[in-house]
Image 1 (cartoon, rainbow, N blue to C red):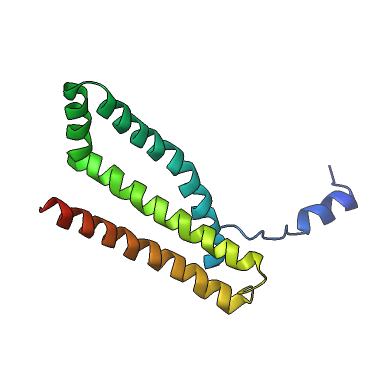
Image 2: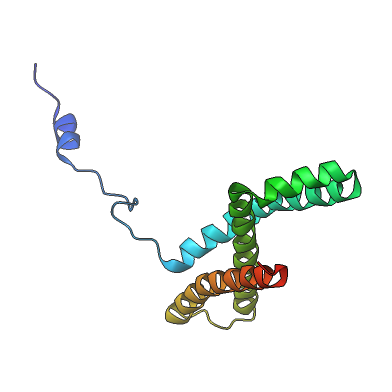
Length: 139
């Protein structure tokens, strides 16, 4: 049984290759935009932790001690460190978008430099905040 000419031609044509992650490297501006959205979502979770800490402070001493113990554990400190970074990154991403809203920095190279500065700035600010926090505690 022979295939029709239309079926044979369809079988010979190769489908175009779409730009998926193995072919296409996302630009830094796109990556930072995605991370900005993720950090915005993470801030909801982190703000719930801040609210939990404030509610514990307003309740009994034993509740406050339990929450402080949890936040003082290695996992708690890791979560708080991540929250601090998410806060700084989201803030700087907002400043980046504010700059772009003025029509400044939209050129490809400038936008890429601002995106890299957002990432570097968030890391530096997070480290400075934690260093200042440990210095203030005397630890």
